[in-house]
Image (cartoon, rainbow, N blue to C red; front, side, top):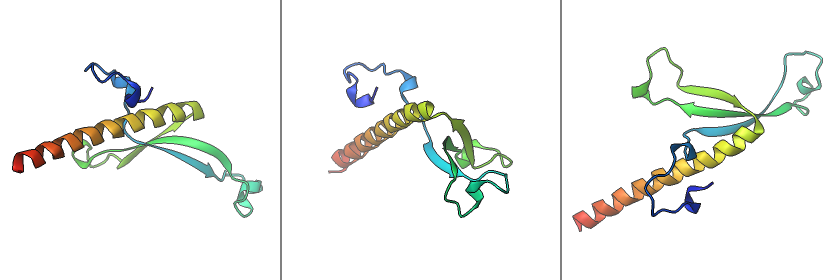
Length: 107
């Protein structure tokens, strides 16, 4: 359910409506030398779906990767896209409220 469809009069929006990251759809070649996917790249395998989460520098140790990739089914990818959209809307709304308050205070 999109955040826009929720009753904003209540402050209790379940956390499972939100996710951070990006859903990526990829087609890939396999390891078989005689597979059609290796002949000109016309018949690649996929699509495969991944959730990619970037770890902020301050939250990771030096040996941790910059990004974490998680394999998803197509159904999981569809659900996560909605949750990511909700997270981005929330972040945008919080940011725009702060900017509006700063403009009102400095005017």
